[in-house]
Length: 269
Image (cartoon, rainbow, N blue to C red; front, side):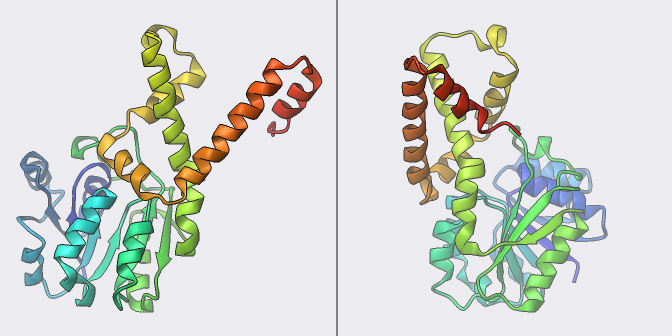
């Protein structure tokens, strides 16, 4: 089997297309952006552009990859439930799984494997994709009772992109990445709003630490809006962060320099 269907060829989907097209896969792409599809075909990153998910039925077998934002993935899947009873191996690439898992639990979808490549960029779109985006990076996969056949195919897919594959219990996925990825992006957008409201010229006064916050805040608003609204764990962790901000504020306002130093020193490696 060497047919790959990629629904959504932005940064992640485009990078998958570029990487797999170099490895003798037949790559089929679906995207509403005609420029991206034409670019992929013209530069031989895709074998064929399809107009809809329905058109995929003409393939006897394939790996189907949702490379769309979380809400879009769910919307498309709900309109194409036939995928869940097909011979295709189906996966996604989103960093938040809560709503998708709720939906999939209503099916005996042994052909759906959750994937989350921990690689990306603050840049977006097919024009910023790279065939080496996943090389040496980690990809998390989670099973909801998937068959070994489909699980092996998705593992091999990521390995063919030179990614390091790790299995993670799906119940722990969103909690973990709420803390390690989603909360940092939330903080970055919040901080940039504070700077904006104070009329700070960040192009002139941004130091090394601020530049990372700036980079995070340049990520896709569509994708991160979806993630912020979809991760059921995020609000709890935001509340925890607010508590720690108040705690540190109180220490900074006190005359107890030793306690403040001890607080700051506990995180040094």
